[in-house]
Each structure stands twice: as structure tokens, then as C-alpha cells.
Length: 160
Image (cartoon, one colour):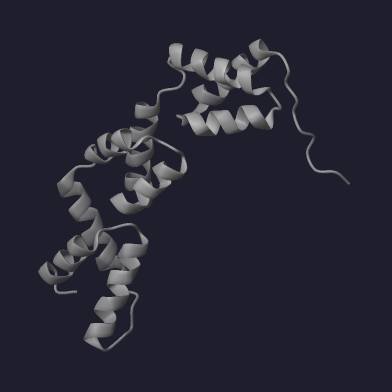
């Protein structure tokens, strides 16, 4: 039994229409769209042409994507800046746009989110040794993408 049949598109106009729908559904990075077009077996020259047309039609906007990605990962998953930055780098978003996207995260909201995250995690840790407990909390927050200096500050201020 074979897996799902792979879509093959050879007509750039058909590819453009499908790509417009793909981009309209949610914000996409150029790399995501490029990967999808390659998946559809479109030839490289046509792929770059389709991407160019998507940008001109404002279906594809890397800065808009980066900001939406940062906002979504922060508000929905409580990811820290480090993890968001890594995610955007994986999607091959330019550094200048990553910086702009990270600036959209409010500093007070960021601090509050980290505090809430650590408070919640602290309630689940049964470690009695204070140093080990703080270490576990710090490692957890770093795994979620928060900066070590900020984690240390929150732990100190909130006596966690």
C-alpha cells in the first residue's frame, strides 16, 4: 500500500493559484513556500517566479511572517526570545527581520510570562535541596528559550 499520492504541478499559473491559497491560509516564510513548490515538482525557475509574484501580490511578506511567528509562539506557547529566534532562523528569515519581530514582544509581558512559567513549574518540583530546585527551574526556563540572566532575576525576585 502506497502513501498519499504526491501532487505534481508543471503549470506555473496553477502553482501560483495553489500557493496563493497556501499563503492566504496562514502567514508563511519564503522558505516554507519554496519547499512546498519543490514538493509539487515545479522547476526552479518557475519557483522563483511564483515566489516573486506572491511577494508582489502581498501574499508573502517575510517581515509580517516573522512578527506573526514571534507573537504566536510567545502568546500561545510561552516561548522565550532565544527559542523564537532559533525557530525563525530555521525558517531562514533574515537576521534584521528576526530582530524586528523580537522587538514586538513587550518587555513587561515577557517578564510576566517567565514569572508565570516558573511559578507553575515550581509547584510541580518536589526537590527539597534549594540549589537543585533552582537549577531545575533554571534549566526548564532555558529549555523554553528564556535568557539565563532574566531567569536568575525572576528566581531572585520571586524567591522561587
